[in-house]
Image (cartoon, rainbow, N blue to C red; front, side, top):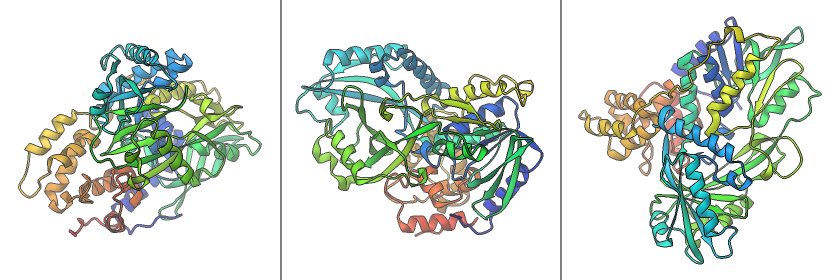
Length: 529
């Protein structure tokens, strides 16, 4: 479906980007702007390659913005004895939280309730969270057992009937959409050329090798082409569709698992998340997120069109039913659900149920030389970028290694700063007529880091942009302008669903959408209303 905006700064910026994409030959064309594509584009650009990245929709517009919003070691992997994986996850988690994105990744206490007749004993869970903490070098304290009363103060809706004890440990969470946008910005800052809402119409070939792609701009219908020495297929659930463009006889390489989530209003704020054991191996989460409670997830095989994935009534029933194992029933009224979303995990092909499939990254090379990468998760997305970069070094038919430098091991995402410090600056450094209240200031600091100062500058220039998009949320209209001019936002969903938190809070009313669309199509400040 074509998205329409009137000629403006966005249109001229897209035109300039298209001109740049058609200039010369890129070392690497990345097709797909989700977790994998953005990570590879960022890493490859740091290595000195000339990189282009395109996506048929928005950056992180599908699976990559439908995660459980966690940066975690994976407590449940201890159940399968995969201690090494947990340790590796912890190392990457610590790096993200301390060096790469402390302005986007925040600490979150987690509680595991142990009930009479449940799948785990208090002793086992106590030992498990202690080992989990040890594998993180006790960087977030020591896992321990809490009394039901202590736990209830952190998670007010915790079900106490039959509750024997509660195991406590620490992990981190983030806003996946914001992480994606910041990673795209980091790639562009390093030299990548990117364009969203640009779908591949066909692959270009030279002497039997894939050497680029023909694309259509879904905003204005314009057609253009990109030439590249190597093409990387990082299209997530659509990975096999692009492989079939390269080779119609290619056999399926992945299978899909649907994960659905619900966003629930609660009568009081929670200060800890719940990891609720469903059976010996599966868990369900209840995580404080953006002023709501995030519930999920499901894990079932999906064979339909990836573009049609959605939350079904059966998903709602399953998520609420599993949540009742650890949360009081009055909390879980379906009428309290403000929003729901579903995404698709990309898993290696093979027999067995999807819940037992390995969560690993698969890299393959097709008959025409196109590389395809699938799988992965947010916690290890930088590691995946480095892994694919090493694969690029080994592509013998098109030697890139001689043109590649060794990228730095740790490069921070844009906006690196202490959210507390940025909040303090926004609150105290006020200009009459452009005041940001503490709630808005904290929200901007924890979603943009030091770039929040650029948003505050927009409010100083046009005080009307300091108005909240919806009175029940902390997002302001200046974020729409910033998303339009600096974060590649084209549609209302780009802004409300992925650049801000308006949609996930259930606040994307028709009036909000109308005003957002008007602002996206104009350089004028939004009118009050």
